[in-house]
Amino acid sequence: METTKQIEDKTAAAFNSLDIISAVKVSPFFKERTLNILFKEEEQKVTFLERVLSPQIQFVAIVAIVLINVTTIYNYSETNYNSDLNTFSESYNLSVSEETLIQF
Amino acid sequence: MHLNTINKIAEKYFLTETEFIEALILKTPKAYNKLLEDYQQKVFSTCISFIPNREDAEDVAQDVFIEVFNSVHKFKGNSKLSTWIYRIATNKCLEFIRKHNTKKRFGFLQSLFSDNFSIDKTNYYTDIKHPGIVLEQKETSEIIFKAINTLPEQQRLVFTLHKIDGKSYNDISEIIEKSINSVESLMHRAKHNLKQKLDYFYKNEF
Image (tube, rainbow over all chains, first blue to last red):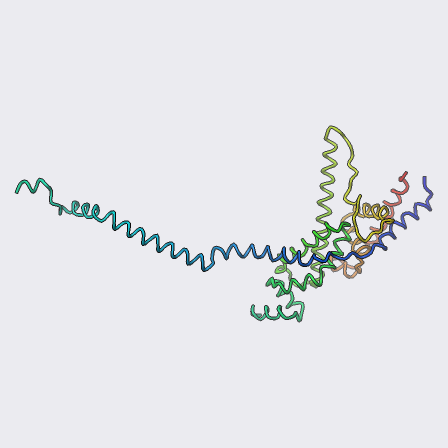
């Protein structure tokens, strides 16, 4: 068992140990590392919106829409012209059927 | 103030704190460069006072700057910018310690309910890696850091900021938003409690 004096000395030494802690310098690359993290995060936040709304994407979207429309119209006029014409003539009784030809 | 004007000011130099804050809100790289130049050492010193391990203290200091970056627009200017940054730093440090203490408690509970019962004596402050502590003082420092860790949060905060980080009562009162009298009282109670804890520890050492 330690004496009261010894205990007091040890307690005082523990308190004093805090006074002799020397200053610690931050690592030399701390600033660069932190700046990289800060602006990398910010870039990532901005690029998501920028990627969606960038002029290149807008241009490509317009070109794609125009191409799709042109292709659709071209294909439509090629394949459906005759069948549409028939349907139209039949619905207005404009077609000349074989039966009618025989009668004459 | 017009956006371009602020950017121009930020790019050259910052005449007043208000202009500097405006540049920080605009996330100007030059402003953050200056912020880190001015505060990296101060914030790190505060962090290592609470967390006696270089790597962990640097991680927490980094979190402080990320928090400043993300929430500087919420800074209302009721206090100095430095006070606001120190407030973030102390909160982050306490958060870190709280997290570690919870982990420790959880570990202890796990050990209680596991088959091979053993009380986990490991503690975050058992093997401190504070580069500013000399080898001869390591054991004594570990004991006092452990004792500080058992203090109530407000007492720990005031004691660490004053005794280890070397901040004045005036600065501490601004950081923790309490009167100087309250700070003095917290400091007095912290010292008293620590003395009791250390006396008890050394009495039952062997």
